[in-house]
Amino acid sequence: MKNILYLLIATATWGLNFFLAKLMMESSSALEAGFWRYFIAVFILIPILWKQLPSWKIVWQNSKLLLGVGLVGVFGFNYFFFIGLSGTSAINAALIMSLNPALTLVLTWIIYGQRITPDQGLGILLAFFGVLFLISKGKPWQLSDVAMEPGDTYMWIANFAFATYHLGVRQYKGNMENLHFTFFTTLISCFCFFLVIQPYSWLSPTSYPADFWYAAIGMGGPGTALAYFAWNRGAAGLGLGRAAVFMNTVPFFTSLFALLFGATLYLYHLWSGLLIIAGLLVIQWQQWRSTR
Image 1 (tube, rainbow, N blue to C red):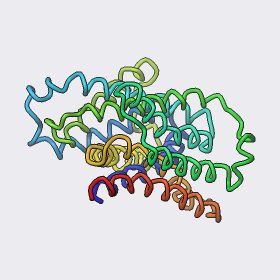
Image 2 (image 1 turned 90 degrees about the vertical axis):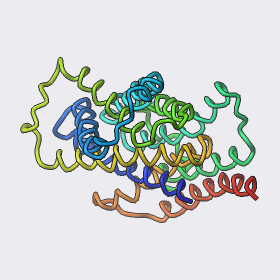
Image 3 (image 1 turned 180 degrees about the vertical axis):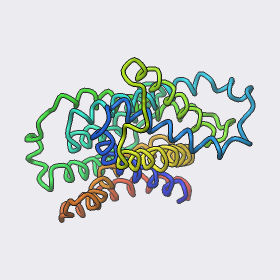
Image 4 (image 1 turned 90 degrees about the horizontal axis):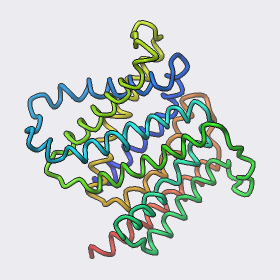
């Protein structure tokens, strides 16, 4: 149950990130928003870990995994996520990212030969249909009316990068504490954003309004440091295949947070949430049966 709670904490904060990212990009570029998100996350994590950092031997043993996950799964995902979100709508982004569980399971099957069970397949279909019901506002037969936008290509790349993040977490052997794993991958992402952004901006903190910093702190703290720690913890305990399905709850939480930004909650939000939850329960049913 704790693992499920960790995953829901992560996906809830990621659902909020859609709005915080849009708010940040009202007064900055996508790359600037990405840098400040991870700079604040590192700033928050350093005091927590300062007296309990792992030995360099442990860091070196995990260096290839940390670099791979930090560069591709964290920086790569966020680089294309921010650029894509600046050129597409939230509904398109939610649709593309909702395919992440299926993409992750397919990559796991291709790379590791892990079989997709009937329960997993049914759970994915239910949860995915819930996402379709949500983004189509209760009319999935009109989904073809959703127009492709320029940023969609970048969101597809971001989706693939996040799937590789899940594969990297799968390789994590556990000889480094989860919080340390989160810190080093976050640090690598922050450094990559710094390298990419330097030719274009001097990153002057005084040039941003107060709303930018409220959103940046929200994304850097709960939306990054807490979210990645919770996701890594939950995915390690629950397993990659079952954890990936929880990504379908991101657009559901996004719709709930929309109420804080003046949106209205409709009946289709309820039905989509029930379908998503039903899909997750089907996945967990398999786990419950196997432990009896």
